[in-house]
Length: 397
Image (tube, rainbow, N blue to C red; front, side):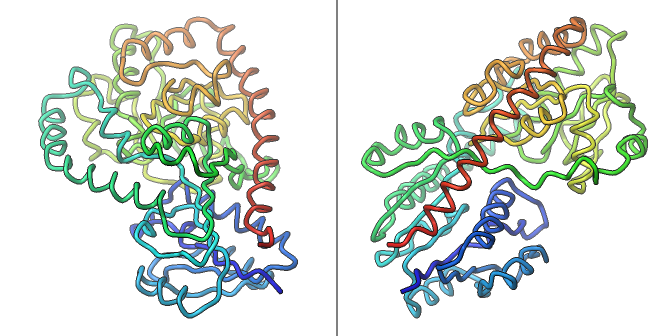
C-alpha cells in the first residue's frame, strides 16, 4: 500500500505582496528533491491560488506526478484532510496549522525559530537610533505586547499539536534548544537538527557578466559593502548602515559605496545619515543579480537579530567574499572562525570590525579564505541533511 503524503507547497510561495522569504526557498528545494527521488509514495501538494506559484514547481509536480490542490484558507485545509486518508503531512512554514487536529497523521514540521518572540526580546538600544524611531518603536512595543503573548500561545499549541506522531525538524542546535527552553515539554519530542538545504544557486558559468550588472548600480568590483533584507526589521540593516556612516564620518579617506538591498529612498532608517551619498538603496532583485552582488562585494555586513540558519553569509562565502555577522542566535554556531563576529546591539563593536577589515589587508584575505573553507564544509552537511529530511518524509509507516 502506497503511503499518502500531504505536502504544504504554499510554504514555497511568496507573501501576498510578492516578497520572498527564507522558508520559501527551503520548501522549494525540499519539494524538488522529494519529487526527484520518490518512487513509492502518493504525494498531494497544496498551494494558495491567491499567491504566485513558480512555474518550475508546477512543472516538477506534473513530471512526478504530484497532484496540486488549491487551498485558500485553513477551513479548506481541514476539509481536505477530513475527506482523504492522508497518512503524513509535511510543512516548512507550519504556524497557520497551530489549531489543527491532525490526530490521524504523522506530522513533520520544520520550525525555523521563534522570530516574533525573539525580536521582541532583542530590541536595538535606543541610543543607536534617531529620536523619532525610538518613539515609534516604544509605541509599537506597547501595542504589540499582547500580540507577543498571543503568538507565544499559538506557538505553544503548534508544538503540542494533535498528531498520531510528531517530528520537529530545526536548522540549528540554537533553534532546538531555544524551543526547548521556551517550551520545556519539547524535551520529550523528537527534534532533529538538519541544516537548511542549499538554495537554488546560479551556476557560475550561467551567472552572466557580473561586471555589467554592478556597473548598472554604478559600483566597482570589491569596492562596496553589501547589506540585504533591509525591510525586515529583525535583519537590523539600519544598525549596519549607522556603523558604516559613523566610520565614514570619522575616517573620510575610508569611504566606500554601500548597497542596501530591500529598501528605497523612502526607507525610514535612511534619515539621519551624514554620508548619504555613499549609500545606494534598491528594492528586491532577481536571484542572478543578487548572486553577482554576493560575488563582487568587498564584504557582507549581516547584523541580524534573529536567524534559524542564515543563508546570506554562506552565499557570500561561496565566492570568497568576507562576512561580518552578528554573534547571536545560530550565527556563532555556523560561522565561528569563518566570519568577523560582533554584538548586533553594540554599534562601536561593529565599527571596530569594519575598521579591521578596511585597514588590515591580510584580514580581508584571511577571512576570504576561511569563508571558502566553511562553505565547502557546510554545503556537504546541507546536502547530507537534505537527504535525511526527504527520507523522513518518504519513510513508510
